[in-house]
Image 1 (cartoon, chains in turn purple, brown, green):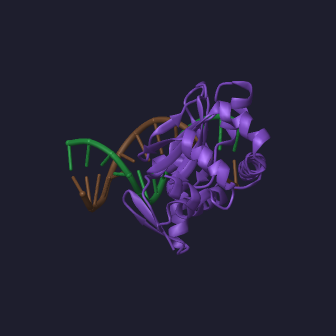
Image 2 (cartoon, protein in one colour):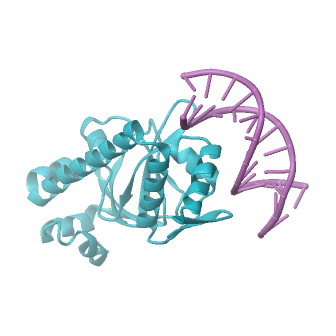
Image 3 (cartoon, chains in turn cyan, green, blue):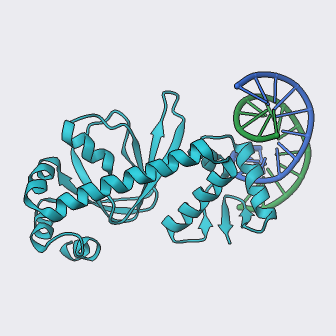
Length: 208
DNA sequence: TCATTAACACGGG
DNA sequence: CCCGTGTTAATGA
């Protein structure tokens, strides 16, 4: 476990902090599609993502979803950090996109380490900034860009996250995450296929 | 003009 | 057959 930590966080944290994480952190392995956090839940510990990917979604009262951004290895959930600070409920939903490995850090350590380790403080602030920037990008996409651009960005993100050209989703699932209807997704995907950007198959598609 | 909803036909597993 | 997919018609923002 210490080796895994060093592999992904060795360049970020000092030796002493890595050992601390190794001591108090709890390794958690989750398969893809697991809901790690729902809206309204209280946060009990802070996750560091060692391997895999997590998607962060916003959800309305009717259960409609909207994809906010993906977390990759080396990332952490900014929402968790702000919630920890004020012991507030979660405002977002987190679902594993791939099989993932997490290290759960008890929230008491958050504060303690911020005072104790410079690298931790930098990491927390950087993560916060990074997530905020991604959120702004998503807002820009929703507010200023057309659905076809959003769809293409979604496909590219997915390919980048999974490391595979093949995307195993139905049109309905994509429509749900982008918060639109399947008709639109089908039509736009068809257009992308005609432009030679993607290949369509049943239950999957390839980005070229 | 473009998204959404409903409805329907096609076809592959 | 069931379900994902492609298309169309009607309606509304």
